[in-house]
Image 1 (tube, protein in one colour):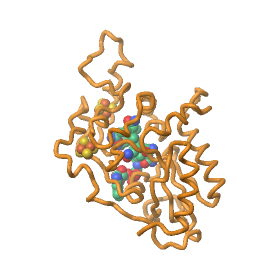
Image 2 (image 1 turned 60 degrees about the vertical axis):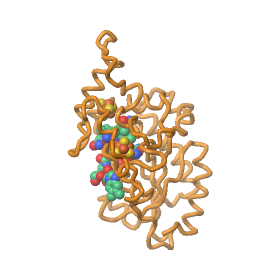
Image 3 (image 1 turned 180 degrees about the vertical axis):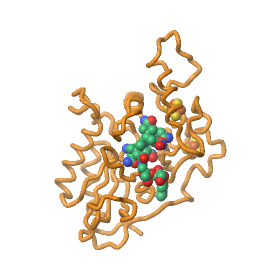
Length: 258
Ligand code: B12
Ligand code: SF4
Ligand code: SF4
């Protein structure tokens, strides 16, 4: 089902404001009552997903006050501020949800429906064009009465899943500690490895044959041939990986690392 006129109007207005931030409208989905335990979402339905494809967002964020103020979670705070301002101006009736903070909203599930993307063997969602190089930044959820729609786009396009055509699956052979398997992501193995890599150990102990994930990004993510031209730049990769490494052991979810 194609977005209706109401959705197109909102998408257009949002897209115009998001472009200078390096972000875009990724698609529409409907919040299903059963997938959210938050009763505050009762009566809400149609939702628009916002995110970044590739690294266009980085220079804008890097120039922000939050990036420079040395306080924790700069990307979370920046995202909340800039997207919050746009949402309040354009769609004040929408509830703003973020993929960080105390409540873990099922953003990947929502992206599956909004964008037709599916899970890669790494657990990250993979897109035919942007590969693994996109991230989810916010969802704006509208009250049901706002939309004369019964359904918004609900699609999971298995035929559009690039992993099905990828026989070699290089992503599964690139991690030095084989952190990815059918049973999930071995967070502790990854953590131990990151603790032992160049930025964490004395230079005399560095094994140059091992990938420098902290500086160049997750080697498994880097190994995917799909959407390489959308790969983040080095400064952004380092920022996310440092945040990711710091996030271990913390319960709070953060967008800084994605
Ligand atoms: C906790 C968390 C982590 C934890 C644990 C991750 C893990 N693999 O177990 C840690 C800190 C280790 C982590 C690491 C990373 N993360 Co993380 N993380 C999250 C966070 C905050 C919550 C995930 C969660 O627990 N969800 C709870 C479940 C219930 O939600 P869900 O969406 O329904 O999850 C289901 C889907 O994944 C589903 N699924 C996946 N695809 C599809 C498709 C369809 C159609 C359906 C129906 C379901 C489905 O299976 C899950 C189980 O039900 C999300 C943000 C968010 N709110 O989603 C980011 C997020 C998943 N992380 C992200 C990223 C990029 C990373 C890192 C690459 C960061 C980095 N710089 O290295 C690494 C990669 C490690 C890895 N392979 O997962 C991105 C992924 C973007 C993408 N393209 O998919 C997200 C979405 C954040 C964002 N802002 O975009 N992360
Ligand atoms: S390397 Fe192949 S299997 Fe792995 S995420 Fe990329 S397309 Fe999918
Ligand atoms: S960051 Fe490095 S050690 Fe961790 S999962 Fe990715 S490739 Fe493996």
